[in-house]
Length: 198
Image (cartoon, rainbow, N blue to C red; front, side, top):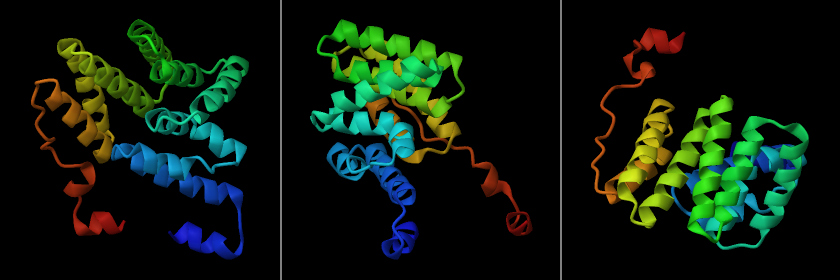
């Protein structure tokens, strides 16, 4: 809100699009694909569009919007040129989301996880684990799904990504396993008032 108030009188596409991205991720984390798509679709700044590519493609795919394929093509071109593991992982993740055949989706999710293992983006790996686990659960492969959902939940909890933890916990429950809410306090909760001030 503050960023948008500042740019209302002095438009800056980078700031405007970064704010849209942040709001879109919040909507995705809450499982609201249409609302996420509404935030993410107008992004035009090329840097923000690349950084938000996973979120944009996931929102479009889950909302049934055709932009997903065009955005995936753009991401694929970047991944091929850069050869960055995170980009290749994103491409495979997004191809899995758009796959028509379950076996193809499984193959793409496994490829995405292999690429993420070469990179250092734990949150993105957890997003792939969540998406793969949810896909397996929907196909009644509950035991297989739990492995991925547990991994996603553990990472989201460690990162204090609470909306994502909640989604992973819900998926795990739907698979027939009950995941307890994390009991340990975050490191900041253990600080004294003076330590917080410092």
